[in-house]
Image (cartoon, rainbow, N blue to C red; front, side, top):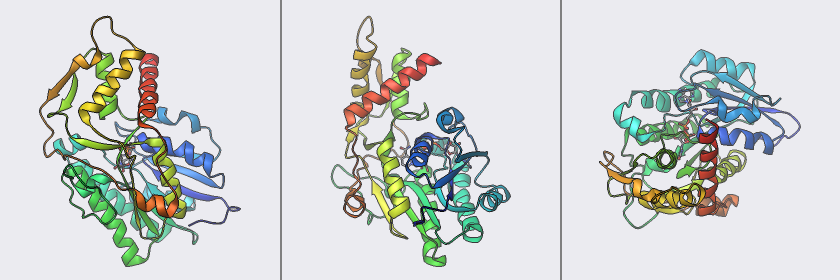
Amino acid sequence: MPESPKEKQSILITGGAGFIGSNFIPFFLDKNPDYTVVNLDKLTYAGSLDNLKEVEAHPRYTFIHGDICDFDLTKNIFIQHNISGVINFAAESHVDNSISSPNEFVKTNIEGTFNLLEIARHFWTGSNNRFHQISTDEVYGSLGSEGYFTENSKYQPNSPYSATKASSDFLVRSYYHTYGMNVVTSNCSNNYGPKQHDEKLIPTIIRSAVNGNKIPIYGNGKNVRDWLFVKDHCEGINLIFHRGKVGETYLLGGNNEYDNLTIALKVCDILDVKLPKSNGNYKDQIKFVENRLGHDFRYAIDASKISNTLGWKAKQNFDTGLEKTVQWYLDKYQQA
Ligand SMILES: NC(=O)c1ccc[n+]([C@@H]2O[C@H](COP(=O)([O-])OP(=O)(O)OC[C@H]3O[C@@H](n4cnc5c(N)ncnc54)[C@H](O)[C@@H]3O)[C@@H](O)[C@H]2O)c1
């Protein structure tokens, strides 16, 4: 990948106003002084420019409001900004929404990725091109209580969300095999940290707790996820974008397997210390609710490939990372 530090490279980051993208852009600008960044984001309910205040006046950053499915707009961005690399974060990302209304998932996750690939194939400039697809461990389906996903695991998506992400991963793969495009894909586990949309598990627990509402937990709370601090994910993406092997896939996980009930209890314990209630504990607000349809039981990642080949390892201790995350949401709610 791009090795010429003297010439500025322009990369297109899509979906940069969402949770991971808005953590990634300031990180990337800081780590890569030879790059300019164009952020193309549709600003759906999940994206917010408030997430990007720290870079809005940055001389190497441009925001463009638009849809990755818009061929003409995206083509013009490639041409006008001499785009040589793409990191594709843009997606409909909430599994529950994909169950109630899958249409947008097919449009953005599949058609949008296809659009970007086609435009990149025809219009990107220079020889140091790279297309980095940001994907999820959910494409591999569900594990039992043992074992881990690896890069060799079979794709077995179970929700409309994971099926659309799997489809886009396959399109990316096909552009490498068919057209020799310089692609890499990374599949990561559940991220946590600042700037995540309120609809996701950890923000929902915090918001419900401090508002005195029930804290909803699906089924019996025993579904397990591996939690990765978003900053660790950003470091992994930056490494893979620059040094990942063409055509390959890398899995990233935090080695923090917890079931949903344990996550809720941990958040409640933190809140009991930071914002004690006058009577009782926050955990008293936990209520089990009807399980999500087709709810995958467990995801867990074996990240030894990226660790052995690129030297990446998640650094954030989970309890400290969760405490930082809870504090970030408390500060946000206090400012609102
Ligand atoms: N959050 C996680 O735990 C997690 C885990 C694994 C993989 N991922 C993947 O990482 C990527 C980013 O996830 P996130 O949690 O930041 O998502 P998010 O929902 O917080 O943000 C998605 C962003 O994409 C934008 N967007 C949606 N449709 C668009 C379109 N058609 N054109 C342009 N922009 C559009 C939204 O406005 C938003 O800013 C996604 O591809 C997701 O599948 C996320």
